[in-house]
Length: 234
Image (cartoon, rainbow, N blue to C red; front, side):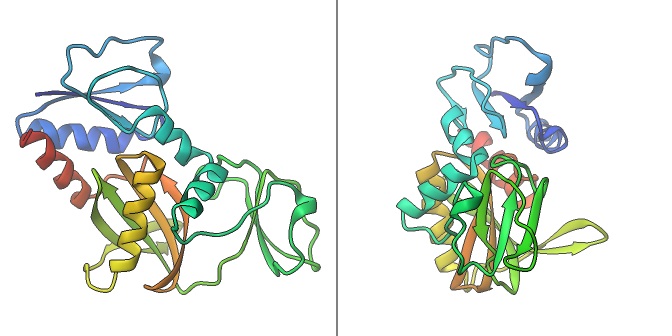
């Protein structure tokens, strides 16, 4: 078994996954597509696209081009989630269309911005609304979770805690996450993505909103084990 891992923004996680595969008898190589014009992956049994929409045809590719693009574009993500009955937030793409009833507004300068880059939280009526490409209401919440889906199954649930500017992922038990799991599994299928980390803000485990689908989600032990198990059992 030979696996090509292609990436542009997830170098560290790609190397972690490749090492785990090699330690279990699977030959795995990481390719930074920013440094390659073209590459032939015909010698590989599988291509694992880690957060890149780089076009490469292969009969066995995880994370298709369109699936990654659906995750990168937040308007696409929101539309697809909403159309498939997954809890998320409404949005507008023009400052003038922001509803007056949104007391607090999340403004993103770039609709495809990663993490919190170019993001502002504005109190409407008290602060000047900046220009942006994406506007959503601020979702009042008590917790934030990362739900990781691989190959149609949840392989990790984490409570996200920030400490010294770094997000710590604290593993959570399955109990109580049934509804959130279901929405994330359906969301992954609708987006057409095989490996994805959903960022979910929640008032409680039954009242939540999916805010982001990360096709380059940080590799965790749980996801690593699931992906390695998949490949060694092919």
